[in-house]
Amino acid sequence: MLVSDSSHLIHKKKLKLMGNAFEISVVDENEDWANERIAEAIDEISRIEKLLTTFSDNSQTNLINQNAGIQAVKVDREVFELIQRSIRISELTQGAFDITYGSIDKSLWNFDLTMKALPDAETARQSVRLINYKNVILNQQDSSIFLKEKGMRIGFGGIGKGYAAEKAKALMIAKGVKSGIVNAAGDLTTWGTQPNGKSWTIGIADPDAQQSTFSALNISNVAVATSGNYEKFVVIDGKKYSHTIDPKTGLPVSGIKSVTILSPNAEIADAMATPVMVMGVKVGLNLINQIQGIACIIVDDHNKIFTSKNINIK
Image (cartoon, rainbow, N blue to C red):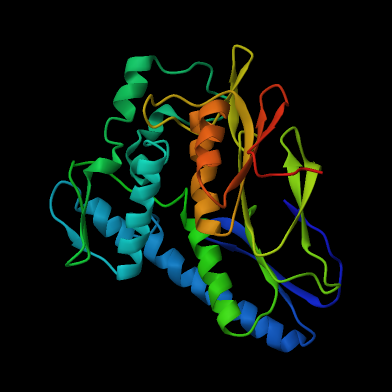
């Protein structure tokens, strides 16, 4: 996604956090002050990364995973509540969003050029048998999480970036930043306006040519997240399959090139983009149309654009 404004009043920093390219922008006349706020936002994202990462043995996420089928693990309230919200989104999307996707058998899915065929349906189903958000047991009183089945794993790949972006934004607003953007690899949250007083302009990437955009949106105090099959995919027998796996079948989804979600909150935008891809155009739009304050743009495999009722593309 592209954010247009070349003003010298926008101070930016790009860096890799949570395994993704983050860019933090702050609008202010005082460069030193802006850079201090950006540094605090980076510290906040790094703090969240330590809690949620699956790449560190002693993160709270990994402690939950290591104890799957054995015992409940006490976690920080913040982690507990993020898992609680994730389960609610699973219920809302009938399991199309599921943080227990970490249980999937990675050996089936390498999504590289060597992949010439889809696994058979039974093998695929076996690979996702441990994915079931209903087997995440939350104990409100002692703030603990228990994964019922041995081998189950949770991961925050579908919601963590949005959560971190939202927390960084909240911190900067609390410190007096009047306007800015936190862009977490295309999942971004905005507040305030550009230095010229106009809304931020967000370009939605063209799924077939990521450097160009097919539409622009003027937004402020809105978060945007895009999920697309153009990042990672395989072509088998002339058909394009996304790296997004349907948690129910274990097979990659097809039919949609990209889904863009707009929401007041980056965590929700991030979490809703993938399930809409899994659900497909009709069911996905139907769901979004029932939720207040959320909008969606879908590009299908034939480059047809679908939008939720409450959106206006220019």
